[in-house]
Length: 341
Length: 271
Image 1 (cartoon, each protein chain N blue to C red):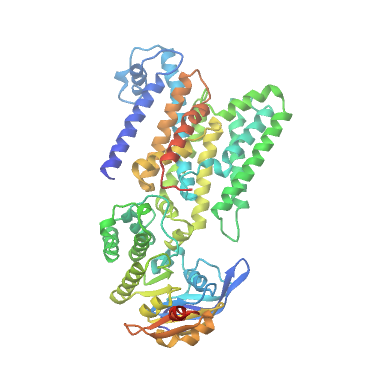
Image 2: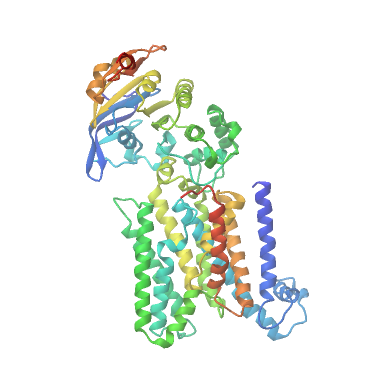
């Protein structure tokens, strides 16, 4: 790792610690960041002497409400950023995002169907909405892949256009269900579509954890292939990469990451697009370094966005990421001379 | 026709794109250490034959044999350990440094989680020295000129340390000075390292000057093959390219092709 890359890593770690402290201190009940951190740290075995004087309610606010929400924000942000990094390598295009494969539209369809069918009432404390969203996301991205096969290959332009077509189709079906369904559930769907971390707790963390961690680790095994894929399919092939097999594996992993993230929080835009872009500007395109920093950076940025959403009176986090993300993205487009369209 | 000294052969290869055949039964053999040029007019199947030799293009009939084994019996990685390819278009939209770009040539030699070691770095730097790129090592490939990028891609192919190097019009977009630079580089690589080179070229003079043997393709079939003086004749060019030319001997002893203008400059003046 170069000196520059070490500095960026150290900066991100500091930012993560700050995010944790501020996030745990943010919410309707006033709790100082110091006190919040001490409640958290005192739970580490051997550090119980650090426990501050705190009521059981304060303990519960930190450990049962704010901590799972924070961890969820970090994991969802990490998963979206890693999925975005993979998609950008896959499409050899720094403007690609996980939603290209129809993951978001598929998740929306699954969630809309579940909510409008009245399935959003917890069954034994377990909501089928995220499961339906997850299945919808994977079903649409699998269909995109299968419909893009031509003679044993999957040309990226075909994949891109098929993704747009099937994404529109899934959105149209969602809209149809919305119009024909019970109007009482309408606003639930709209809130879901905007993405939110409010009222999420440990069950959601448990749901996304294996995907966010597992798939990200497997993606890291493919760091070199991701580098080589940035040269284009043909050059990757000549450098010894079995392109079609690697693409299928990477697409599956990216879809799993994005689907798991969208399923538990609803559609959150721009994280998968901007984080890899930004980190690449800071440390260069090599995935051996890019991937772990995107995992970290994605988590930190979504954690910060959730603090903003929380402070702004619990608005959906998708609004925050888009309000900050869209202008920032335009700025990147404007300054990036190397991507001439 | 195919003997044991041959490291790469195509036997009765038929292939093309979307059911339209471009090659109609091509048989060629290339011996270890040879520097062979594939020439022929546009659409004659030069690039298609090269792609068939890399294994990227599925064959409808025939077989490509690499070091005694059919190409299909090798994995992608095994092929890349033996054959490096410099495609017509290379480079990346992403700003890898020249060093990282050349290091990618080590891909087929590295295990899944194996980091690039000092040996790989050494090989990459040797390749960069050969291609005269050491001054540009930390420059992003996105900022290179056409000639520099072509040299970087050549260095990447050298770093792959393969016995065979296949090139598809390596000088297509380069000016005359860089064209010679690339071919001089290939000649050194061929002579000093005993590497086998197969190069598609549309430039008859360059091919005649640098290649030991030329294979002429015409409409998806081998028309002629042999050493440049035997192959590059006014008669062959009239038959294959439908162009009227004059062929004499260049300063290096290789055949030199000049077009005969339909209206010559001197005639012009007389009118």
